[in-house]
Image (cartoon, helix red, strand yellow):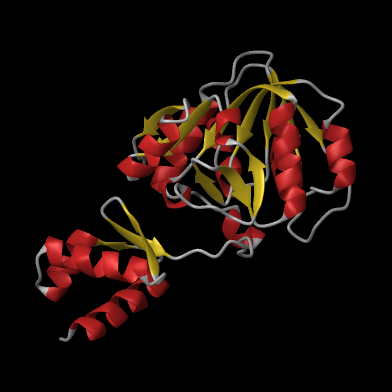
Length: 255
């Protein structure tokens, strides 16, 4: 197989599976891992994919449509669940916390503590899941409801500015040394407000989002007190964020 044919096949696998691993590609094509890494580096230079620790994921655009709710609010992948679980462990009794509308925020729900605390959210789906809890007080931000069931307009921003929060769980479509970013300005604006009104901000950062910059900035990386990623994260991306003075924790994947 010629190198161009091999790279076309790698792109097919990326489109089908959403990621590729260098070791599996080396076995598939009966090549050394170094040869596969060279392929991935060449493809990254051409903008065809983005390399990660151990493999590659599809290249991202600065504006990508979010996943539909039917996909966003499913059981998370093991590495995402590991981040969600570790993040939830930082909630203390009587805290007031902001939990946004990301899939990884939804993934926190099974790991939330059983003692009393308060949740502020812009997600109807998350508010609905928590509304019957006798331990958790839930505040849903008001404003125009999007088809996703989330609220992120100027009314929601004004609502959120009324509060002071103990803890904000932030995330984004992209997370890099340049900051947190997302595809739409209104969601970015709400994210900035959540960070601004919170005494502490913890960023939930799956490896596939590290080193990525999206269209609209929702916060500087120095706004983050703690970043939680997983054990597939790029060492280079972690070191770039740590160089800005941000503490990074690694969550080991869980089933």
